[in-house]
Length: 306
Image 1 (tube, helix red, strand yellow):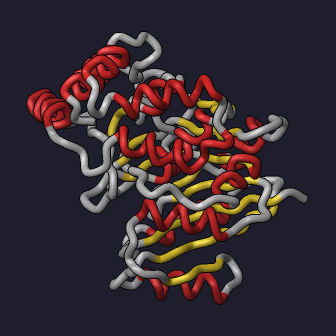
Image 2: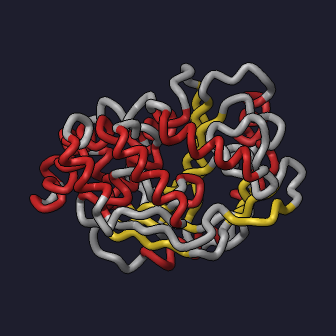
């Protein structure tokens, strides 16, 4: 029997954690499922909840220092080899019962690195529908879109095969990366792997005040949406797409074909070169899932703020 490791990073998640764990344990999958949790220094009742599930034999967990979700997830992936598939889980969502099996079916016969991701149904903290999904249109998973962060396989929906996971497990982690999902998506695209997107939601993504990274609510006013877009364009990022691309390229160079190295080089050069920025701005392959997001992204790049 093949196996799948579900990797969860927790931090002060006692409010919704039980519901999420139960939705994972109730997955209808043909694979042997192992839930592996790393706690990121919780100070609420999260550790007590995890301990009870561990005593029942439902999961394994370790308590670690507070390093943030990105490094927490990647540490779990790097330190747990030997599984056929891997999936990431947030601490506060609800998974559809067929989430894992649909992903396994989609990438199970693919040779080489591959990953699967889906849309999400957005709900509020009480599981009421908000009226939209994460993606209004299918994302563009071109290499240019992924490296420039116009497209990313949302981590909580993602399933990757062992061929992709082994690249992470057999090498050091990049010096800098924005989030675990952007790192994994960039790596899969750069090495020439397969990315399969399913527009059918595989889970309910809970939006609340404590989300690490939340989605834009359909109930937000146009004024707030416009203000958010302007902030995206003019605000410098703590870790830029240029820095992440360079770090990934340096770490996994041996796995990346020459043509993809060149494309990555253009993104890296755009940090200091207006010519490289213009190449990206006028690149037809670089696009978001909607026109207004595409324009926002290209303005960020033009101003050097991505």
